[in-house]
Image (cartoon, rainbow, N blue to C red; front, side, top):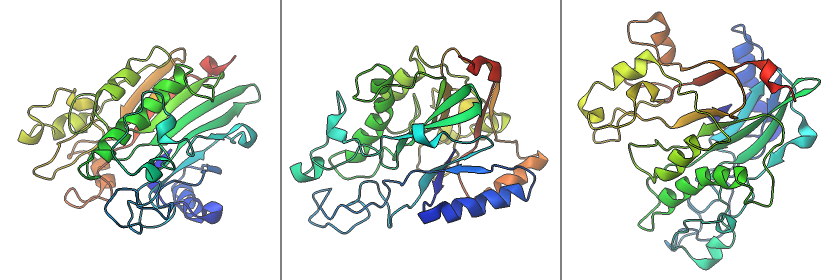
Length: 303
C-alpha cells in the first residue's frame, strides 16, 4: 500500500512505478486504486476565507485532482466485485464526529476522507480472502483557526473504530482483514488528538505487532525527541525541522486479532548500514517516511 502517489486515469503513474520495481526483481502484477478525494473540487468556500478556488476548497487538500493519492500493489488479484469505497462518506454522518465551525453549506458536502477509506479484498487463494482496510489521514496541523485539520485527522481514524463497532451503515468485513495506512497521528507525541489512535491500537478486533527498527531508535537521540513518550524504536517518520514535532509513529499495519504474526518491522537502517543509501540524502530525502511491514502466516487466513 502506497500513499502520496498521484492517481490518474488508467493508473498510468502507478503502472510505471510497478515496472520500476519489477526491473529490480520484485513483481506486483495486480494494481488497484479508487479515485482520491485529494484535489476534488467542490466549487464552494470550504474554509470560510471568502475564496472557493484554493487547494483547501476541495474534498481533500490538493492542487489538482488525484494529487498524493493512495494505491495498492499486489502479488495476488483483487476481488474487484467485493471492493468497497467509503470515501464519499460525509464527515457529519460519523457518530460522535468532532465537527469544526465552517459554513453550513460546506459541512453539508464535506467528506470525511482527505484521500480515501477503502476495503480492498485480496484473493490470497481460492478459499482465502484478506481484506485490506486502507486509508491515509490528513495532517492534524494547518487548516486555520477553527482546528479543521486537527478535528478531521482525529475522525479519519475514528471512522475505523465506528466501523469495527458496528455503528456505521456499512458492516465490517466478515473475512480476515488488516487495517493499514497513515493516520498522521502518534498515540502519544506530536500534534493531534491522540485518543483516536490509542483507542484503535487497543481495539479488541485488532492487534498491534509493534514493528521497530534500529535506525529509528538511533535517530531519536537528539533534543527534539527528548520529551517524547512513545518508544522511539517504533517511529516511522523523521522530521528534522526545528522547531518541529520530532520523529513520530504515524504509519500502521494492524492485523485482525486472530491472525498469526511471524514478524514485523520498519525499514529504517542505521547510517552505517549499506541499506541506508536507499533512503537517499539525509538532508534532502525523497520522503521522510519509512516503510512498515508485517509477515502474516497464511494458514491463519483460512475460514
